[in-house]
Length: 415
Image (tube, rainbow, N blue to C red):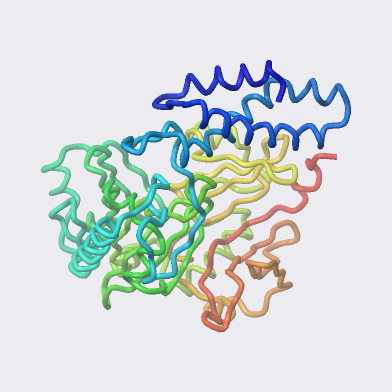
C-alpha cells in the first residue's frame, strides 16, 4: 500500500473511539487493507478510474478495517463498539427462535427474556381483546359511548370521518376511538409504544396464522377472530433494509356488527352493488370526488397533504391512510384512478364477489394478485383486487377496489 494512503488510513483510524493499536496489530490490519486495495486496483484499469477512486478508497478501507477491529482491535474489557451492530437478515420460524436473533424494532438482538416479555404482552392483548378492550384505556367496545369519553378526556387531537365511522385520536395517550352514528364505540386503536418491539414472527408464534391478511400500501394487517363479536387486527409496518422483518405499528380491536348496523349501506353483498353503482358515476366508496371531473389540487386543499406519494408509469398516486383512499392523477392533475381500502369491502371474499356481481369482463393475474375487471360504463372500469388464491386460501378476501378512467391514463402518460 502506498505510504500516503497508509498515513491517511491510520489518521482516520485514530479518530475512531476506544481503539488502541500496538505495532503487531497495526501491521496485521494494514496488511489486510493492502490486500483489499490491491483488489480495487486490479479491477480499475485506467488512470481516470483510479482518480475517481481517490479518497473514496481510503474511506472504504477504513470501513473494511472497522469490521476487522470488531474482533481484533478492541480491548477485551470494552462493551461498546465504535461501529453499529451488523444487521443480520434472519426470519425466525415461529417457535424456533435462537438467542441473539436480530428481530426487534431497532435491528439489535432480542434476548430470551425480551421474547418471553413479548409473548406475555401478546397474551395480555388477546385476553383484553376478548373483552373488547386494549390495555391503555378502561373503555370497552360496544358499551362505551364517545360522549362520555369526550367528557372525561376532553376534545380529541384529531377527528376524521371515514366510511360511516368517526375516528377520534388522542395523540399523547396513543389512542384512537372509532364510533358510529349512535356515538357507540366500535373500534379501538392502540399505539402503545411497547408494541413496536414485537416482530411478525412473534405474533404468529403467539396467535398462529391469521384468518385474513390485508395489504394496505405500506402496511400489512393480520386479522384474527376473537369471538362471535370481536376481531383483533395487528397492523405491521412495512419491512426495510435496516429492519427486514415487519414489527407491530399498532393494534385494532373491532366490533364489526356495530360498524354495520348504522352504516349508510346494508350488508356486505349490498356494498358490492353500491360500489358498482358508484363506479357508473365515476365515484368510489369513501370519496366524493369523481374520476375524470376532479383535480388533485382540490382534494389536497380539502383533505390536506397526502400521507405518501408515489410516481408509477406516468401517474402520481397520493395515499390518505385514515380515509383508506389512494388517488391516481396524471400530469394535468386530473384524477384518473381511485383505490378504496374500505374495511367492509376487505371483509368480503372472492366467492361473495362472484355471487353478487357475476362473471367479470376479464381476469388479470400477477404473481401476487388476481384482478376481476367489471365494465361500469364505456368510460369507467371497476377492478376488484384479491391476493392470488392458494390451496390454503382458495377464496381470498378483497384487498382493495380500483375505479379506473383508462382514457385519462393514456392521454397524459409520459412519452
